[in-house]
Image (cartoon, rainbow, N blue to C red; front, side, top):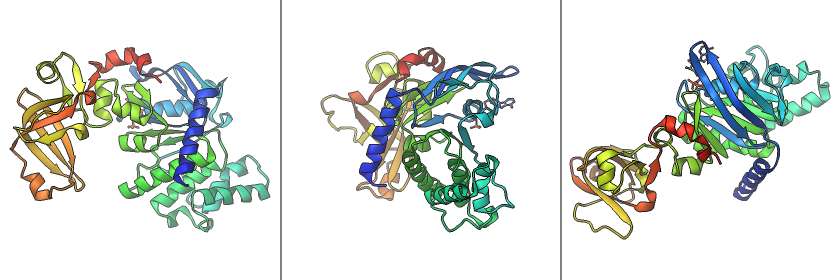
Length: 374
Ligand code: ATP
């Protein structure tokens, strides 16, 4: 897909999101397992045609929410609407959704084509149409020519593509994906992220994607929800969530937290509160460097240097207390030069507009959730 086609598809997705009935609407959705509130009464709208991610740490309630949308799990409170219809008590097979699981769940004794055709067989789609749709689905995931192989004769990435084709062939209006790339190595995962996004734009189906990997969520999503302890802390576009995290938790989970609080905040920022500044916005300079207009600065000492190839991460202990992480591109510095900075006194500087004020505690932020909603 060309860059302009990609932009156009993104615009179309945004238009679909703003105008019509949402593909998925969750109202005060709750799931309790005994004492545990796995999902603690969430409200959420996902637009038709959106690539929407649910991001959060292990145990934050993402999978349970996804399973309730699929119908595999019954809520203990609240409602689920798909394209405006209440499906809360409707069984999974009567919902216009399909799920792709991390473990693929392919039938090992069947060929690739038979695996993909399975859903159509069950629904008694005529043979000729079935064949055509399987061919189209395999073409879409770039597995044409693999139809006669068995899952055991495929790589992990290819198996994942079969699982995707098997879901897409049913042409659901909503596709649910639960950490589908979790079993793949980093390089393949990154390739598949780009591909998944391209496929989603091509088919225009609403994708709801569960992941604990912030980079993955930022790469693919039109919008994402950040989950914490069964609640949603923030909903927004990747840029909104990264550049304007609403809470301490979001700032820390999506990126490096870099918090300035208490005495440090008073000394460095000039007022009380909890603030964050992203590592890539901070310049690492010498003690005597002049401050530019509109800049804030802090003195400190480099405690640790982590050389990452294209970048270096410096952990700096501030004279005023606390620590900041600084990342710098290795434009001109060699690894030796970067590593030699350990122990050195430094002056950090950043533009005032790159300081973000955060809500003090996740709970307080959750109560003020509307302010974070788009
Ligand atoms: P992960 O990324 O590890 O899958 P998650 O964010 O998807 O985590 P969930 O699987 O939704 O989290 O789990 C949320 C909470 O509900 C956890 O505390 C989990 O232990 C609990 N939980 C989930 N399923 C059950 C169950 N069937 N019985 C009891 N507790 C459960």
